[in-house]
Length: 390
Image (cartoon, rainbow, N blue to C red; front, side, top):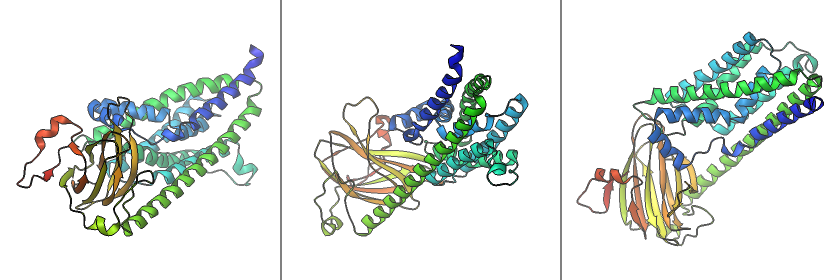
C-alpha cells in the first residue's frame, strides 16, 4: 500500500481538478426555489450560500491551491491566504454595496488567467522562460484577490438583497465565503502535506502546475466564448426589437404580424413596482397550448428579467426560462408548452424603485406567487388596471 501512495495522490489531485471544472455549468445559476429560500432564511441563508459558492467555485479554489502549493511555513500560508482574503473582501463589499456590475463572463475570464499566473509563478516561469525578475508575489495576490472579489460580487448581486439589511446581507455572504475557503484550504493542506512526503512530489508538482495552467486556459476560452455568445444574443435581441419581432423562443410559435401586434387591444394593464435593490415576480396561469401576448416597459432604469414558466404540480423547483436579459422593455408572445404558470422575475439593481407597465392579452388567469400579498391589490375604477399583487 505504501508503494501506491506516490501514484494515488496525483490521481486524487487530478480528480479534484476535474470535479472543480465539472461545476462550470453551476457557477452563476440560481433557481426560483433558491431565491425563495434566501428570502425565507435571511442572513443565515446568505452565510450558507457564500460557503457553498466558495466550495463549488472551481476558479477561486484552483487559485488558492496554487498559492499554498509550495508553502511549507504556516506563517507564510497565513500571510498569503490573508492577502487574498483581504483583496477579494474589499471588492466584494464595495462593488455590491454600490451596485457596481461587471460582465461576469469577462470577470471569470480574468480570474481564469489568474490561475494560469499563480501556476506559472510556481514553475518559476518568469526567470526560466522570460528571463525577468518575477513581480512581488504579495502585491500580485492582493491585486488578483481584488479581481476575484468582483467575481464573487456578481454572484451576490444575483441574490434578492434587502435594501434595509443590505450591509448585513453582504457581511453574511462574505463570512460564508471565508468559512468555505477555510474548509477547502484545510483539505488542500492535508493533501499537499501527504503528497510532499512522497519521492515523486518534485516531478508530479510540475505536472500539477502545468495542469493548472491548462485548466486556466480552458476556463478562459470557455468564458470568452460565453461572452461572445452573450453579446451576439443581445445584438439579436436589439435587432428583433427594432424589427418589432414578437418571437420569444424558436420553440414557441406566434401568429401576429408586426402591424397587427402594434395595434393590439390589450386585455389587462398592470403596474408593478420593483423595489430598490430587490426583485418581484408576476405570473399568469395558462393551460397547455394557450397564447399569451405581452408588452412591458419601465418608467426609468433597465431591469434584469427572467421570462420563465413552471409546470403545474411540480414540487422539485424546476422551471423553464424562455428568455433572460437586461432591458427597460420587452414585447412578444408565447404558447404555453405545459399547463402551469408563466411570467417574469424582474430584478432592480438601482437604489430607487422602478415601475413596470405590463400589458397582456390571451387565455390566462392572473395569479400571485405569494397568496398572502393579495391584500396589496389596489382596486381602481378600471377593472383591467391593477397595482402589483406581488
